[in-house]
Image (cartoon, rainbow, N blue to C red; front, top):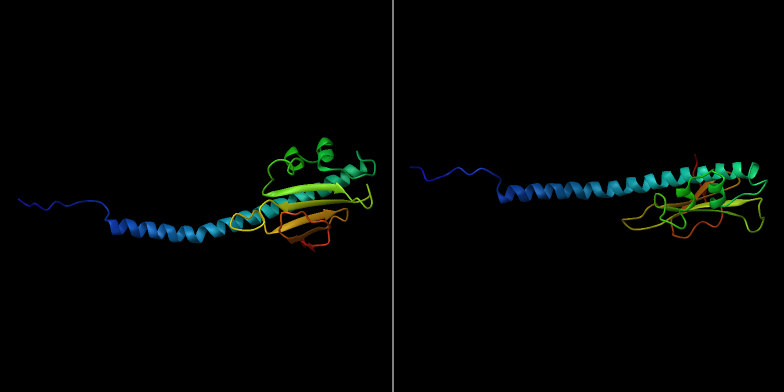
Amino acid sequence: MNSNKRQLGFSLIELLLVVAIIGIIAAIAVPNLLASKRAANEGSAISSVRTITSAEATYQSTTGAGSFGTLAQLNSAGLVDSALSGSTVLAPRSGYFFTAAADALTPNSQYLTTASTSIPSGMTATGSRNFASDCTGVITYDAASTTAMTSNNGTPIGN
């Protein structure tokens, strides 16, 4: 009788090789995934700033009677959704906090809308730029930080 039995299955070396290959693929894919998420967050923030800019113009010419409004006032007028208007108090929207306020120097004739990253650096950064817009309608950006931009004098986004 033949005492050698044929054993089916994978050897330990084969399994370790597969695990190593999966690890290499993950090491390549994860940074690209995080970069894509940051880019998507920034695109969403730009879109939200555009929405707020349009809402401010509508609010000023209708409900505001010549004055610009806060995010809460824009929400009450039905011009922005509650997720956007509550993003400074609640969790950030797509990794950004949003503000909209009348300019203190010239009340009711100008406003500043900002979008600032909730996590500005590291592997879990939600964006690499902060954004701002005012009554000119130009959206600008500056390097990311947790502090909102204080004016619209950054670099225009160009689109």
